[in-house]
Figure 1 (cartoon, helix red, strand yellow):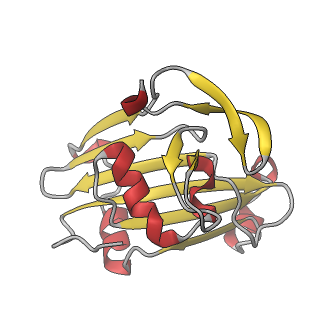
Figure 2 (cartoon, rainbow, N blue to C red):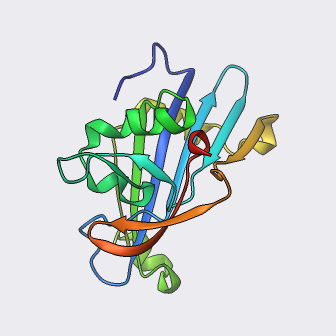
Length: 174
Protein backbone atom coordinates (compact mmCIF):
# COMPACT_ATOMS: atom_id res chain seq x y z
CA UNK A 1 0.00 0.00 0.00
CA UNK A 2 1.45 3.33 -1.04
CA UNK A 3 0.10 6.60 0.30
CA UNK A 4 -0.64 9.22 -2.36
CA UNK A 5 1.61 12.30 -2.70
CA UNK A 6 -1.19 14.34 -1.22
CA UNK A 7 -4.65 13.39 -0.18
CA UNK A 8 -6.46 15.42 -2.80
CA UNK A 9 -6.48 12.45 -5.20
CA UNK A 10 -6.55 8.89 -3.86
CA UNK A 11 -8.14 5.50 -4.41
CA UNK A 12 -9.38 2.89 -2.00
CA UNK A 13 -10.70 -0.64 -2.16
CA UNK A 14 -13.97 -1.44 -0.41
CA UNK A 15 -14.65 -5.08 0.44
CA UNK A 16 -17.76 -6.15 2.31
CA UNK A 17 -18.84 -9.59 3.46
CA UNK A 18 -21.83 -10.84 5.36
CA UNK A 19 -22.27 -13.77 7.68
CA UNK A 20 -25.13 -15.26 9.62
CA UNK A 21 -22.94 -16.17 12.57
CA UNK A 22 -19.24 -15.27 13.01
CA UNK A 23 -18.61 -11.51 13.00
CA UNK A 24 -14.95 -11.82 14.04
CA UNK A 25 -13.52 -13.47 10.94
CA UNK A 26 -13.61 -11.88 7.51
CA UNK A 27 -14.82 -14.18 4.76
CA UNK A 28 -15.53 -13.96 1.06
CA UNK A 29 -16.40 -10.42 0.02
CA UNK A 30 -19.65 -9.98 -1.81
CA UNK A 31 -19.09 -6.28 -2.47
CA UNK A 32 -15.85 -5.23 -4.20
CA UNK A 33 -15.34 -1.66 -5.33
CA UNK A 34 -12.40 0.56 -6.20
CA UNK A 35 -13.26 4.20 -5.56
CA UNK A 36 -11.08 7.03 -6.83
CA UNK A 37 -11.65 10.47 -5.33
CA UNK A 38 -10.37 13.77 -6.71
CA UNK A 39 -11.18 16.30 -4.00
CA UNK A 40 -10.03 19.29 -6.12
CA UNK A 41 -12.04 18.39 -9.24
CA UNK A 42 -14.96 17.12 -7.14
CA UNK A 43 -15.01 13.86 -9.06
CA UNK A 44 -15.44 10.27 -7.93
CA UNK A 45 -15.05 7.15 -10.04
CA UNK A 46 -16.67 4.04 -8.56
CA UNK A 47 -15.63 0.76 -10.18
CA UNK A 48 -17.66 -2.29 -9.19
CA UNK A 49 -16.01 -5.68 -9.56
CA UNK A 50 -18.24 -8.79 -9.51
CA UNK A 51 -17.29 -11.22 -6.75
CA UNK A 52 -16.52 -14.00 -9.26
CA UNK A 53 -14.14 -11.86 -11.38
CA UNK A 54 -10.79 -13.65 -11.68
CA UNK A 55 -7.73 -11.85 -10.29
CA UNK A 56 -4.13 -12.84 -9.61
CA UNK A 57 -3.90 -13.24 -5.84
CA UNK A 58 -1.85 -15.14 -3.30
CA UNK A 59 -4.26 -16.61 -0.80
CA UNK A 60 -2.45 -19.82 0.03
CA UNK A 61 1.19 -18.83 -0.53
CA UNK A 62 1.38 -20.31 -4.02
CA UNK A 63 -0.26 -17.56 -6.01
CA UNK A 64 -2.59 -18.08 -8.90
CA UNK A 65 -5.96 -16.83 -10.00
CA UNK A 66 -8.99 -16.82 -7.78
CA UNK A 67 -12.28 -14.91 -7.74
CA UNK A 68 -11.88 -11.45 -6.23
CA UNK A 69 -14.26 -12.56 -3.44
CA UNK A 70 -11.21 -14.26 -1.88
CA UNK A 71 -8.87 -11.26 -2.14
CA UNK A 72 -9.15 -10.27 1.54
CA UNK A 73 -8.31 -13.84 2.63
CA UNK A 74 -4.77 -13.58 1.29
CA UNK A 75 -1.75 -11.49 2.10
CA UNK A 76 -2.85 -7.83 2.25
CA UNK A 77 0.41 -6.77 0.59
CA UNK A 78 -0.69 -8.33 -2.72
CA UNK A 79 -4.03 -6.56 -2.92
CA UNK A 80 -2.86 -3.26 -4.50
CA UNK A 81 -1.13 -5.03 -7.40
CA UNK A 82 -4.05 -7.40 -7.99
CA UNK A 83 -6.41 -4.41 -8.19
CA UNK A 84 -4.06 -2.38 -10.40
CA UNK A 85 -3.81 -5.34 -12.78
CA UNK A 86 -7.56 -5.25 -13.44
CA UNK A 87 -8.40 -1.54 -13.02
CA UNK A 88 -5.19 0.26 -14.00
CA UNK A 89 -5.52 2.30 -10.80
CA UNK A 90 -2.97 2.66 -8.00
CA UNK A 91 -4.99 1.77 -4.90
CA UNK A 92 -3.80 3.56 -1.76
CA UNK A 93 -6.10 2.32 0.99
CA UNK A 94 -8.65 -0.33 1.87
CA UNK A 95 -11.83 -0.42 3.90
CA UNK A 96 -13.13 -3.86 4.81
CA UNK A 97 -16.52 -4.43 6.45
CA UNK A 98 -18.09 -7.56 7.81
CA UNK A 99 -21.81 -7.44 8.50
CA UNK A 100 -23.50 -10.10 10.59
CA UNK A 101 -27.07 -10.98 9.66
CA UNK A 102 -27.75 -7.81 7.59
CA UNK A 103 -31.44 -8.60 7.26
CA UNK A 104 -31.94 -8.34 11.04
CA UNK A 105 -29.90 -5.29 12.03
CA UNK A 106 -31.59 -2.85 14.35
CA UNK A 107 -30.27 0.57 15.41
CA UNK A 108 -29.25 -0.48 18.94
CA UNK A 109 -27.22 -3.46 17.77
CA UNK A 110 -25.63 -1.37 15.04
CA UNK A 111 -24.75 1.47 17.41
CA UNK A 112 -22.99 -0.90 19.79
CA UNK A 113 -21.06 -2.66 17.06
CA UNK A 114 -22.76 -6.01 17.54
CA UNK A 115 -23.40 -6.47 13.84
CA UNK A 116 -20.63 -4.61 12.00
CA UNK A 117 -16.85 -4.89 12.19
CA UNK A 118 -14.50 -3.01 9.94
CA UNK A 119 -10.83 -2.37 9.45
CA UNK A 120 -8.95 0.09 7.28
CA UNK A 121 -5.52 1.49 6.64
CA UNK A 122 -6.98 4.86 5.62
CA UNK A 123 -5.65 7.69 7.81
CA UNK A 124 -8.21 9.44 9.98
CA UNK A 125 -7.73 12.82 8.25
CA UNK A 126 -8.50 11.29 4.84
CA UNK A 127 -11.59 9.54 6.17
CA UNK A 128 -12.70 12.75 7.90
CA UNK A 129 -12.31 14.75 4.68
CA UNK A 130 -14.54 12.22 2.89
CA UNK A 131 -17.19 12.44 5.59
CA UNK A 132 -17.11 16.25 5.52
CA UNK A 133 -18.15 16.29 1.85
CA UNK A 134 -21.68 15.51 3.14
CA UNK A 135 -22.95 13.79 0.04
CA UNK A 136 -21.16 14.02 -3.24
CA UNK A 137 -24.28 14.61 -5.33
CA UNK A 138 -25.49 17.66 -3.39
CA UNK A 139 -22.32 19.71 -3.76
CA UNK A 140 -21.69 19.60 -7.49
CA UNK A 141 -19.74 16.35 -7.46
CA UNK A 142 -19.45 14.34 -10.65
CA UNK A 143 -19.74 10.59 -10.07
CA UNK A 144 -18.80 8.08 -12.74
CA UNK A 145 -20.00 4.49 -12.28
CA UNK A 146 -18.18 1.58 -13.93
CA UNK A 147 -18.55 -2.18 -13.75
CA UNK A 148 -15.92 -4.68 -14.77
CA UNK A 149 -17.91 -7.32 -16.57
CA UNK A 150 -15.07 -9.23 -18.16
CA UNK A 151 -15.49 -10.85 -21.52
CA UNK A 152 -19.16 -11.39 -20.71
CA UNK A 153 -18.39 -15.08 -20.49
CA UNK A 154 -17.83 -17.45 -17.63
CA UNK A 155 -15.79 -20.58 -17.27
CA UNK A 156 -16.16 -23.42 -14.84
CA UNK A 157 -13.01 -24.20 -12.90
CA UNK A 158 -11.66 -25.40 -9.56
CA UNK A 159 -11.35 -22.84 -6.76
CA UNK A 160 -9.78 -23.89 -3.47
CA UNK A 161 -10.26 -27.52 -4.37
CA UNK A 162 -13.94 -27.10 -5.20
CA UNK A 163 -14.66 -28.09 -8.78
CA UNK A 164 -17.52 -26.66 -10.77
CA UNK A 165 -17.09 -23.05 -9.63
CA UNK A 166 -18.20 -20.47 -12.21
CA UNK A 167 -15.89 -17.48 -12.61
CA UNK A 168 -15.82 -14.42 -14.86
CA UNK A 169 -13.06 -14.25 -17.46
CA UNK A 170 -11.15 -10.92 -17.31
CA UNK A 171 -11.30 -8.51 -20.26
CA UNK A 172 -7.66 -9.00 -21.25
CA UNK A 173 -8.24 -12.72 -21.87
CA UNK A 174 -11.18 -12.48 -24.24
